[in-house]
Amino acid sequence: MNNLFTIIFKDNSNYFGGTLEIPKWKEIPDKNIRSIFYSLPTNDVLCLAGFKNIYHYVEVTMDLNGKKGGKTKIEYTYLIIERDNQFIQYKINQIDFGIEINILNKDSNYIKGLNPIGWKKGDR
Image (tube, rainbow, N blue to C red; front, side, top):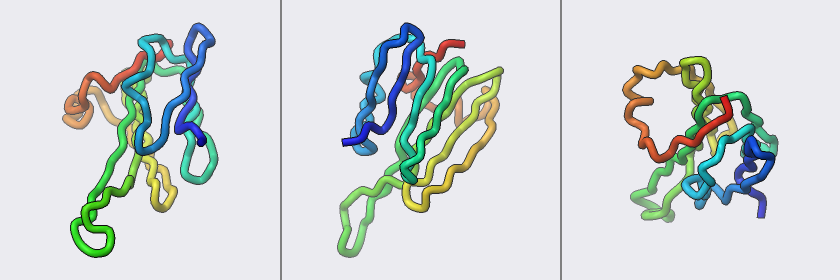
């Protein structure tokens, strides 16, 4: 099984995330993150470092009708980093493999609406 992400902490210890279905984000130890290596659906890896905070979540839809009625499907994963008083959102499409990057400010309703327990500390 491949890990969804690998974290290297400031103290050089590592943490290996789970899968898309069970990312194990909430279980990340409360330590400063130096960098994260995040597996993309193309089998490439996105490396992020030098951020103040980082957030992750998965967007899932549920088919209501047809052969897959009642089953969930992961459509997007999101990584959001806080750096230099702005927030950079990486929206990763798990179906067609595209990545959309958005710059948000701290006063946006989107950022304010995120559950605070999802934020993890960076090393900046």
